[in-house]
Amino acid sequence: MRPRLDLSRRALAAALPTTAIALALTAGSASADGPRPASLGWVRAPGAEGCIGTAALARAVEARLGKGGLVSASRAEVSIEGRIAPMENPVGWQVALTVADDSGKVLGTRALVRQTSDCRSMDEDVILTVALLIDPDAALTPPPNKAPPPDTTAPAPPKAPVPAAPRSAPPLPASSSPPAPNLPRKAWNAAFLGGPSLSFGALPNVGVGFQVRALITPVPVFAFQIGGSVWAPQTASFGATGGQFFLATGALSACPLTGVARGFRYAACAGAEAGLLHAGGVGFPVQLQRDNPIVNGVLEARVVRAFVGPLAGSLGLGLSFPFLQRQYYYLDAASAEREVFEASPVIGVVDLLVGFDL
Image 1 (cartoon, rainbow, N blue to C red):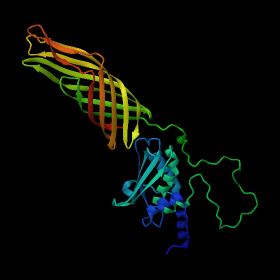
Image 2 (cartoon, helix red, strand yellow):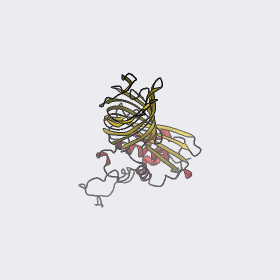
Image 3 (cartoon, one colour):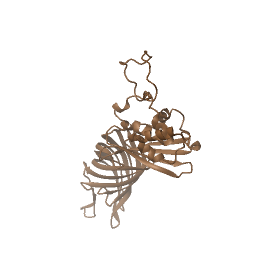
Image 4 (cartoon, helix red, strand yellow):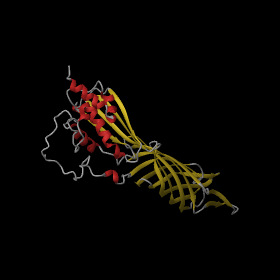
């Protein structure tokens, strides 16, 4: 039977608002002999790159425990997996924690939610919650660099002066890490994608091609996109004669509207594309071929969703507006012009790409 002191300490821990969240998760599973060897996994979702990282969280948890509690996964009795992600409506942050034993059985889950624009304001809650999953008595250990509460059961100290920090001395910081919350969070992101695409109006028939895109976001509110497209050759025939066409283009766009919503990264872009349309005759006594320049204005919308790790998929919709409108024709036996193909004044493109979102 454990001494009554332990029971009162547990009651004190349960009285703390943040501590109670974690104790509900660890009840019935924590060891009474102290912290259990535990492994820690920590993931920052897209948009949470400025939140506390794995190494900083591990150091803070061990400092809170006052003793070693984190080990490699092969030596752990329990594993703690955490993930922090932004919320859109309302604006804030959500932390999901899962605890499993060494056989992989899930012992419990818990979510921490805070409506704030600064994810670093959740650091102390996350640190304390993870520490409590390892050792429920961690609630009674003061955070690093904070003075412990006075022992009210001890006799009153003598009035003789004792060494102490001057009253005018500034308080020690709660953490030794630099004041990152006051700095802009890094939101650099790059998605490299490639896959099939369809075009409508650029060639005599529906075009089938391969498209590559790089969507780069150097700051949270702006991105740019670069890429290229190659379209399979097509033939427009009129009896035994006709024309064959092959199209390749490259594009560059600026994306002033970009962001993240419900796990999807989105961008609305405007720019230009340029390339060559190779045209040649088919079935004529004299075969003529030409390479004509293509210059188009481009509007494009794209969404990107990461699935497993950096693996991602993307859907793109675009409109092109040719600056150089070209008509392709040939002269028949009566020297009359016979139209073969004329590009549409508005060209539509749709693509479904896969790649990496870094």
